[in-house]
Image (cartoon, rainbow, N blue to C red; front, side):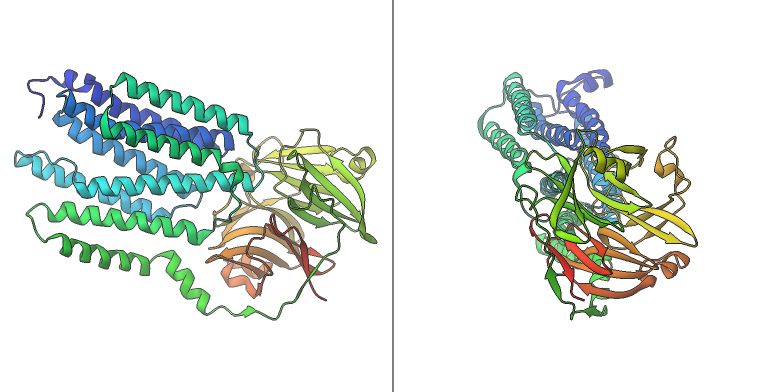
Length: 525
């Protein structure tokens, strides 16, 4: 039943509509936190998203129970859902977890549905949300939460630390606010149990963020994305066909299937799959274990390996998740030579590179690249930072250094699923501006890059393609002049594992390492 004789002011101040409007504000806050890239902010955003979705569940119940259903509310509720999910998926697309062309499709879908609503309003009918729309919303909700959860897990796996105490407090505060809302709005019956179950499931998801030991890859995220877009297509077809009651459920399902398959065929994923059939991989590569004597407390947390003319440096974390450099003499790699610590000056080492007696270390938690004086660090046992460069990126990923045309370039790949390589002139970069503001050029890779390393005229990229880790050997000159990584590929090498973290070139051989392999491998000579 719709409330009668309400002014615009009364409709806006209607408590149900205020709940709906509050979701706009919560969405804005959550999006800003997601873009920060910081693990703590991401966790808070996760909790805010959960509370926002829970209010979306019971606002309609309150409206019907208290006779507060309004025409404005019928428009605001789906509009709030559309805007919220559009921005959430846009943020996920920014991290490469959701295809941007799917987000564009969502936008046009909602425009079409909006015009359908306007059309029906001219006939004197306000088109309320349909069952297909509710189903689409549930799938989109599940999809966005799974993808945000993957982002949280990847952040932890890539070295951003979050304490169990912080997780506990976030869960406790979130549950308290949720239960308080249930009491204030007098939620009863099945809806009460639904909200309780949802809040407990989301709380459990937060609690296990630190404990997941599974590698999420592009195939995983794309599968989730494609399920989401499939239900979105069905909702669109259902709304359009409902105008004049054209077609039954069977017809709409068939139309949805055809359109979904068409979108799959023209998707970047299918193009990747097609390309993969014609790529020739070097399946004859032989790998062997590298005999570094790793202390057991560092053995499973290797984050980077690099060599200098005299030393081998292994970036690791101890049991307290404190970043550490293990140093070996190249003439005697079986014996640990020295350990360098950082006394909290660096929170997390994501990757490292050597250049001119300095180590360059990227901290993806702080989004800073540090230069470390090697000799002074070896003398004192502490990492001696000489310069620090803020990347200007949301969450910086892997690091590389190459020489081209007598210029030395620092390369950064921005976060997990971003497909761009950013090049900075190492001899010109300044601490006064972010690296993003000093960008020389960027090149699209079309691949999920996990590791970068340069060796004279070549660039080696560790990529995950269709769930498989591969090493691409790229001619640096061809790649830069043609502005395409694909056009510079000279060979593709099979790896020894599907859960690698990075690669380096050691003694003119390719070396790989992973978080859970607990072993460093190198190609046989």
